[in-house]
Image (cartoon, rainbow, N blue to C red):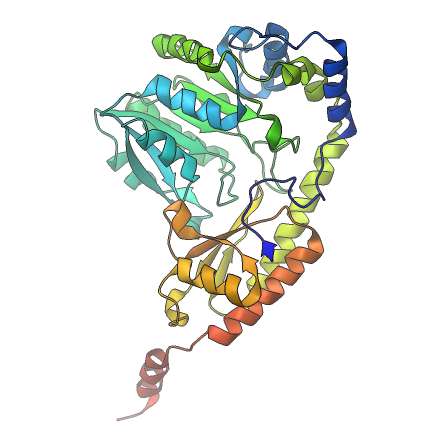
Amino acid sequence: MIPLTIGDPTTFGNLKASDETIKAVLKSIESGKYNGYAHTQGHEFARRAIAKYSAHQSSEEIKPENICITSGCSAALEYSILALAERGQNILIPRPGFCLYQTLTEGLGIQVRFYDLLPEKQWECDLQQLESLIDENTAALVINNPSNPCGSVFSKKHLEDILAICEKYYLPVIADEVYEHFVFPGSKHYAVSSLSKNVPVLSCGGLTKRFIVPGWRTGWVIIHDRENRIAEVAKGLRSLCGRILGSNTLIQGALPDILEKTPQSYFNSVIDILSENANLAYGMLKKIRGLNPIMPNGAMYMMIGINIEQFPEFKDDTHFVQELVNQQSVFCLPGSCFEYPNFVRIVLTVPKEMIEEACARIAEFCEVHYKVDNTIIENNLLGEIPY
């Protein structure tokens, strides 16, 4: 079985944490200083380290009191939603998008409204449709950039267009930027908060992906609120940190060294692997009849469109994936998991030879089941017959 489903970069053993990251944690453990509870928002020195690491997100100084260290980026997202919205309100989330947004939101009695991302525009937002969803009960807009599952990276102009809508409706942003440093050559990531003049932004990030340590469960929320528009939200966010009495203190003790001493060469090597895998997969998949891969610009995923009418044996993308598993032992996630049918998502963190083998099996599977639309052929032939 080749599992192209798991968003855990450690799964296959080809991507590992850097030596510097491991040494920082060992140092923290051996010091014996971080076995007890910390401030519920996190140790101040750890928050200062995050502020320094994230300085690119704002033209103003990021203060440690505006940072909450959480149990992974998922907890950062949960706290942000809890602080901004209440039962009966609604939040706008992307489609396709990370399924956790919907799970967290609906579990709190908050309505989800999906704004569409457009594959023909490299997954940019449908701005007109997005704006049409906003009403007096809309509490926040979730922006995931770079995107899971799309691997897209928004341009500066597109982010500014989104922010203009948010400013018009006084709408705060929850920015899921856990992949902010996972950007392929030729693309550039802009932090939402760095472009915002007045729109409050809760930026969610963490160690998880960039440092290849998802199991360490260390994330954070940074409050960017130049005009002090969400003072009560910020107060609530800080209070929420007390729910679990703070995050992992051993990792907090290591944070300054992890964030400062992990070399850029390590990060570059990870990006090189992901980018090469993306190019390899795209090059192989685009040759397959019935498939339409969308080349990613970042993160660690690729979305692949299925012309499902060319595969009449399959009812939908889920059926397609089930039979791909049964017949070729390749496991992708159906687009339905992301509220986007007739697509599948693959991860790009697997070893190169595994990507090649998976794409070869997908090609064999599609060739067996692809059917030409005879109606189109007949219509074309009739159009060529002179009367």
